[in-house]
Image 1 (cartoon, rainbow over the protein chains, first blue to last red):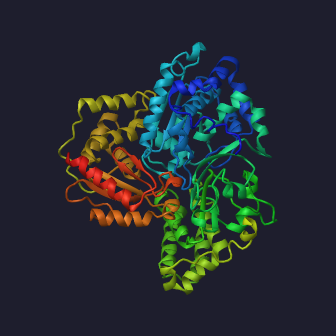
Image 2 (spheres, each protein chain N blue to C red):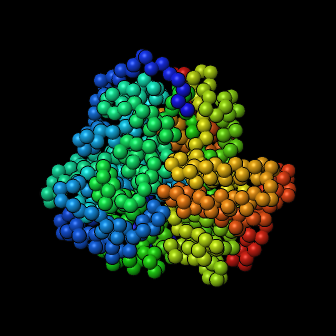
Image 3 (cartoon, chains in turn cyan, yellow):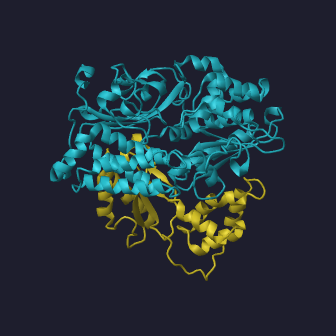
Length: 451
Length: 174
């Protein structure tokens, strides 16, 4: 098992309380940053760390921070994106439930670095228990002088609030989140201007994922250079992977980026392989939006190199034979799962969650859902696969926000890699409603891998 | 969908609720009180069990915004109930990762046990249920949450669902 930066103390009883968290070295990063560093130096450490946004896009966090406009006399805001709703991803729920002070500590350091005097944690509304946990943690931190006026006597003031969402996947997109925080529908904004120039209330704003903010704590404690030593290439540090689906040991794992995908999947230190002695059929490596890969392509790249859990290796092969790290929502499918049904399920999700602002997404997602529904229920046509690819191509890149792309990729990649399974649903329409297609050839080299 | 409701009988919020509203409004800069809309709608729903049109009008008055600004928000977000629901609303995650570990059989079982279709209310007014999209607990599926408290239940089986429904019934009949 690799090192743990975020989850080191996760099993300590009472770590959700201020006192226990503090006794384990908690809030040291706040003391170090506020008392010994300037805001610019904190930004510099994060830049040196190579930390990339853990919410899905993978944009370097330090660079995002350095883009923040700092006009005189204008408020700046830090908003934490805790609207975790990407299917497959549940790491932020885990962090907020069990070690909420790590997020609070990261928020204080990051707010100091950005010069924010008011910061918000936007939590998805369904996570009411987590909202209560965070509000309690904030009250504790405030009572101990880590929030509010003149923190630790340094003259720095910060108020931190939790904002509940209302149940909308789209609010995970940063400009939709800001709209929602302003009390409006979650319709993404046209960019530019980017939030770094005009975000919340038109003021310069940084929006960061929960895990990115939490990672700032070890970066400040150990130094950006130390953090950058972990990982491989431009994938530095550790990453939380939410492992779900047909796994023996689903859960949240902290891995060093660059861990071999095969080790992550089969090692008893991590997922422990596929449940019930079944074989692996397919993997969605980074949340439902990223391209699905058949077992053989997930474990080895097209060049027959071992696939690693890193931003670059997972993307190796582009959209033809690769996928993406995304938010680290890892879903494993065993031999009994139906790819057509899963693709229909995801298409329904994106149709349901489209905000309706851009017509390619609003109309296209519903169209794809209908076509996939008829394929799954035995009314499909041979031309449907080309139709789906055609619709997905017309959504991709033609919408204000990435939800359109996120809806298009799972459909296009499922047809690219599992076309024979879709065709079988057409040619064997009745049979397809009574049983699943099975493993077919998708896992061909897998026997060798297991042995 | 927003059905036609009696908007002639205004809703008057209790002083306690109003003070909670004011506390929420204090989190935002002066003049940005509209930011309080989503949290306030949650408070209204916790109080009344759903969000009626007259209640939304009163929220609009409180925040000094137009009623339509409240309606458009309440109808956009899935958590706000625009018609009365059962006392306990069982929301089962139906998205991919839960689906592949058996969300559909759980929903079928709930439908059979409660004897009402998705979105309807049981005769005793205690229960409603619906399938919802990803609840971000994919490793513990199938999962469901129960509004209005949003308590969370993981690794569901038909047996655990039976027990849950039984416990809720007992609690309500106490």
